[in-house]
Image (tube, rainbow, N blue to C red; front, top):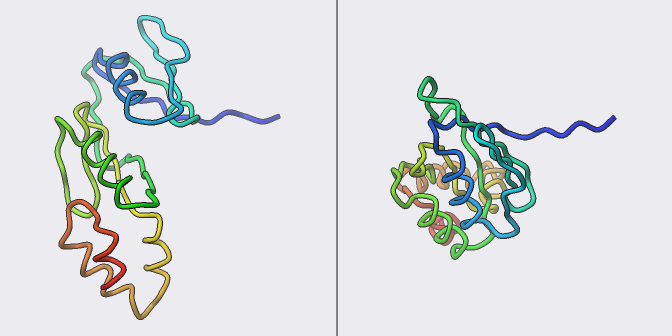
Length: 140
């Protein structure tokens, strides 16, 4: 029997606002159901649940969402959209306006890191970055 696996994001009364915001950022996204406690939504076809659980728990970078981007334009788009009203961090990490942590990374990074000769230069390059720059990584 197949089981559906999806994250539950705990908000302090902002689950609907967060789901609405995320659905505006990602293509192929929608709120699928809601009640006063829970909002179910899909981001680019992947299911999520937002819970209005109260102030007891906060988000942290210990749980983040990785978004692999094929182009610099995609990196730029998600970096600006998800980071608006939040905090930009080093190496492609950001916390959005709701406190959720995201890693906006180029899809080519795994390939660049697989080359043992190039990997140290790539690491040195991205340690100097907040938002990833694909061209600088490729020429490192």
